Image 1 (cartoon, rainbow, N blue to C red):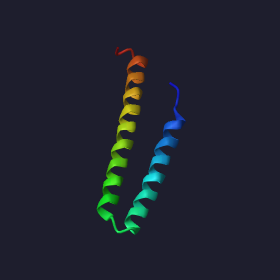
Image 2: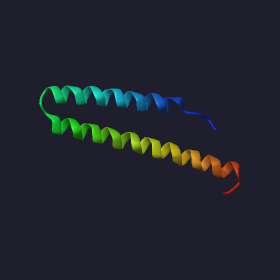
Image 3: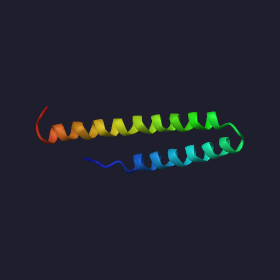
Image 4: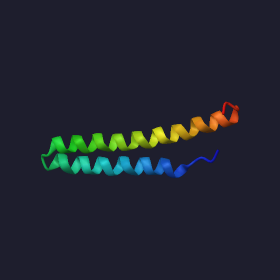
Length: 67
């Protein structure tokens, strides 16, 4: 199993960018839009993590010969 360190950096980068956008929008007084940006960022990261978990479970299946 090859560990994809790039995925960790992508998730961290998305978190930093979303935090910056959230702060800027909140300072502009658009708090509703800032919350939506945060929710959308969370959903994107959640899909990335689910995809990584799927590959992990497939790898576990092949290691223990369940497939």
